[in-house]
Each structure stands twice: as C-alpha cells, then as structure tokens.
Image (spheres, one colour):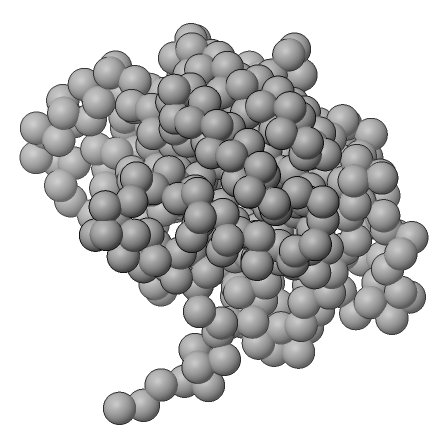
Length: 391
C-alpha cells in the first residue's frame, strides 16, 4: 500500500504511546493517574445537553449544514464577542463555524500558505501547529518563549530572514502547555510586529474562559485595526466541557476566513446542526456554568501547585488554562523523568519536549482529575522523591 512521504515523516503521536503503556500497566493491576491529555472530566452543562436533545428531534436539523455554519451559531459568536470583549463582528464575513478549533487551525495553514512558506510558532507550544505546517509543506520557525520573560513573545530574537519569509505567526494565551497568560499590550505588540513585517497573526484562544483570581483573558481583536491582519480561534471544548462535540469558530480577518471557508467547503459540510444550535445557547448564556466549573479547576490548581512546591518543584502559579508546568528535578531529561514517573509512581504526565525544544526541563500536568486524585498524585510524587529521584 502507498503512504505519502509527509505522513511517513510525521513523528509518532506522543500521547498515543503513553496511552499504550497506560493500558499495559492497568492490565498488570497498576492504579494509573492520567494527567497527560488535556481532556476535561467535568460534565457538559445540562441546559446545553437539553438543547441538543431538543434540536436532535427536529428533522430539519438532520440535513446538511450551510458550509459556513448555521446562522444561529455565527450570530451567537458575534453576540459573545460584543458582550465579553466589546468587539463587533459581521456574522456573514468575519465568523466561520469549525468542527473544533484544531481542524480549523490545520486547515487555515493549508489555506494561507504555499509549500516552502514559513510559519512562526511558539516554543513551547501546542504540537498541532508544527504538524499542520508540515502537512501543508511549510517551514516552522520557533518563536522563543521562556519563564524569565513570563512566556511572552520575544520578537527581537527572530532573525531578519525569518521575519521577511514568514506568512503567519501563531500565539496562544492562556497557553498550552505553559499556562502563561497575556495582557492586551502583548497583543498590541504582536499586531504591530505583524503590520511591520507583513505577517498575519493567528491567536488560539481555546482557554479564554478558564481563568483564575480575577484575571480576564483579552481578545487580540480588542487591539485597534487587528481585524486587518489577525484571526482568533475559539472553542467550546474546554470552557463548556464539550470536547467530544467538536464545535469551535474562527473570527477576524475577512480574507483569511474566506480562504479557510473555501478550503473547508471542499473538505467538509460543517458540524451537525443540532450541535451548532446547542452551542449557540451556550455562548448566549450567562456563563454561570463556566464559572462554576472554573472554580473546580482553580481548586485543583491550588492543590496541585502547593503540593508541588512542598515536594520541591520550581513552578509558577497559573492564572489560566487547565495545565500546570513544573520544572523537573535535576538529573533527568523531561522524557526520562516522565517515563520514570509512570513506571514507578503510576502517573502520566507529558514531557516538555513534546511542545518544542524549549520545553526541555519541564513537564505538563493536566488538571483533569478530582482533588482526591490530586492529593494522591502529590503523595506519590513525594514518595517518588524519597526513593532518591530528587537532586
């Protein structure tokens, strides 16, 4: 059978290898605690499920969706942006429905670049960016991020050659994997950088509603004239615990959105209409369900953060996302530490190098288990340390 070179050249998906080992350990009676994949474990709010059930009973919703998504959903996205950010969007030209933001990001790169073009991606950053660039035949260039600068972009570290060659630049706040957050001035700097260098800015805002301690994540579209060069991706997966529903959106620059819409119309026919209409109700809600679930995530974060500090880890306290990003103890690479933690403590974490070279020395832990299991994680890690792993 024939397999394309670009698929052959893809590295194995790291999470799948950990899941395989997880099943082997479980089969041998090990109580494995999985903090690897960022999959929320909390339920979708009941009012959203009720709306889905209602709409699923309507035969008209079982037809093909319009290629750009239902009017109800796009109008709900516009309502959400104006209410939350004070940003006005045209539902017909500045909003596109997605089958989850991950496919939208991958397809946008296909729609926006030609083979050989350069795309700047954050390091550390979500691995799907680099994979999508590879599949589009592009070249990835890392945008350096580090803890000393609070994981805020260091545009001055990009070479003149890369600035001139780049067509797109990706940002992601609150960040996966680092949990870093940004203020509006970071986006203002990014828009200025894009304008000066002819680079479109793509912001992945998948965790925009999952924030703590009074922090409110801004939208890049709040920057004046941002829509001239920027788009922003949003998802209901993490904020409304709707990962399996596969529903998201992209907003902003009309040209990029039209290019993506044209590509997608040749690939898919948008999402099931009943899901879109249930998602519209979610975005028009008072967000009280989101706030309730965010408080649960915050409690988990506080418990994990303080436990890791007690166990001797260097870790910054997150203000957003569903992750925590501790520096590993001395003497191990990220991959070796993660493997040893799984083998000896039954805890799955993701090595930082899965997110780029700058992730070396760190692990990502998802806050996707109840506090009782987090307490068990901390107990096991402290025991793990006592056996001689600590520096």
